[in-house]
Amino acid sequence: MAGAGGEAGFDGGGGKGEEPGREIPDEIADEILLRLPSRSALARAAAASGGFRALVSSPRFLRRHRALHRDPGALLGVFTFSLSSDGAGGDGAGFHPAEPPHPSAAAARALAGAADFSFGFLPADPSATDGAESEGWMVRDCRDGRFLLDRVAPGTERGTVFTELAVCDPLYRRYVLLPRIPEDLADTVDGVLNVFGGRRACEPFLAPAEPCEPDAERPPFTVFWTARCQRKVAAFAFSSRDGRWRSLPSPDCFIWRRRRSPFSCPMHTVWNRRHYAHGRFYWVD
Image 1 (spheres, rainbow, N blue to C red):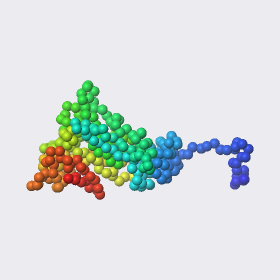
Image 2 (cartoon, rainbow, N blue to C red):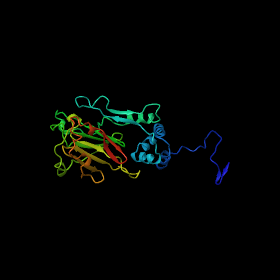
Image 3 (cartoon, rainbow, N blue to C red):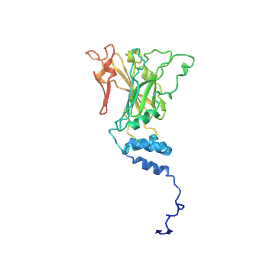
Image 4 (tube, rainbow, N blue to C red):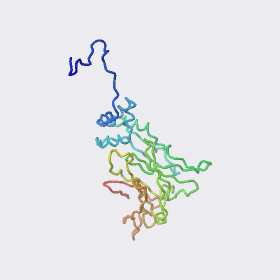
């Protein structure tokens, strides 16, 4: 068979005329992998090639893939945190991957094996090196692949209000330590009530992921910090866009009125049942 420039590259004599295999450039492989329809297909591609695995494990690639393939059934698992009677983490704490016959079971197993849900990559407390006891990091919230943890330094009251905060990604073992709340804001907080059996006196939580370009290397995030005071709720917000804390007005529904405060019950259970829907946070009694 002849082509425009002479003989074609087909050789019937033992394959001596075959061209050696060529590597696919990363930019082309990236575009091909982006068109795989599901997370399970990505997992199979990653298992077939180390080069593919490096491409599909990139946070930038995963954000672009999610933007192209909106899969409402892409549940990989749930993370639970429980407290035992002494206030320590219960046996049920941790990541529970989806299991067969769920379509995401294979990807969930891969995630469970690759991520560090013990958060051992977070910095240790430097003051605990001399034998001092440290509570360590405690998971406070998780949303959109990020985890918010805090810890109390040794020598401070267990129910401390202002804890050290970290936002991290357990899959890529990256974290950001948040700056402490400025003194001028902290001075406005008084008469704080405890939560978690006295282990904490604040409730920090993550805001839903902000819209950003799929190619963004480090998508921005927002952390809310709240504390129940005797006559109000103190609330601050931190944005990774500028690295600053800001004060938020106390919600009118929580300000002490003539009626009995919803937080005056001994365990303050209402505060521990927070929900998010349609751009708003709700505390359900």
